[in-house]
Image (cartoon, rainbow, N blue to C red; front, side, top):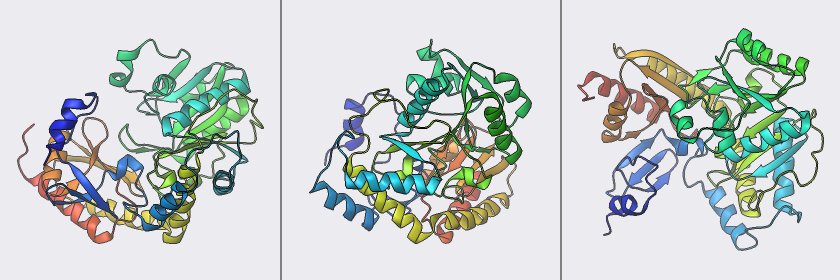
Length: 388
């Protein structure tokens, strides 16, 4: 058998640090490697696998659509695209949508739409925020390790402390096209925004003529216990950026467009693959499955249980447990990388969120018994000596 890891290391670009475990199959919240070992998946496709792996309904929709029509530019209407557009707009209670292929593309579109609508050029983002790796999205991203190799970036971006309304208010001026925030900062360490902060940010934008952009690429589609995280706080974003689990794991993104923007001018943006019938068919199936399985309610109930179990772990290494729904971070007093490796060796794969946070982002179909196993495994790992 070909050594898959060696072949990837030989041919890959080098931009990813490989975990060293070759995954070949998934089902629900479980993964299997090429040696037949089973893992509880708390990476969840970095948020793209909310519906779990190998969902039969989504797989059937993909197979059927692939035999009819895979790719079609949006200059030609299509029944799958029209249906998913209408479904997304109704779910988010927003009038229009632009379809693309990823979260970063959804963010880039939002920035362009904000500039062309307001005729302003500056943006305010939050410290610890993560919005993507292309040049515009990277300009809004805080982490200097991501930014510095590519500077100078797009000018006009300012970063202010998250959950600090006074700092945000001072930063928004007559030149601000938009404020972009995450409802829960994921990559930056799993920090939920307070209702007062998020509602205040929205009000500041409305009063000063700036647009309010919410990045729900990771928090969307049930992750936090509501279909969209902004629904916890009765927010009305002007632009809502979605991706990850929008199509059950098939690459797709969307920028929902609020009433303050109206119909956008023609030819200001576009995408070859955006809104292709294959992704749209997958999305329609995935959205139906999310509703059938009531994934937001499952995330709320099981997330509360999981948080409680993690908070019960008696370890001096834990500084804080925080999160919302099934987006959960355990901040440690040491670097998280050795503990992630130890978890993998014991059959649990998870993510980092900064240097010292273990982030759990499982499929929302994960069972309570599987979550208990994850909590027990973390407790064991924290009790054992782990080399830095």
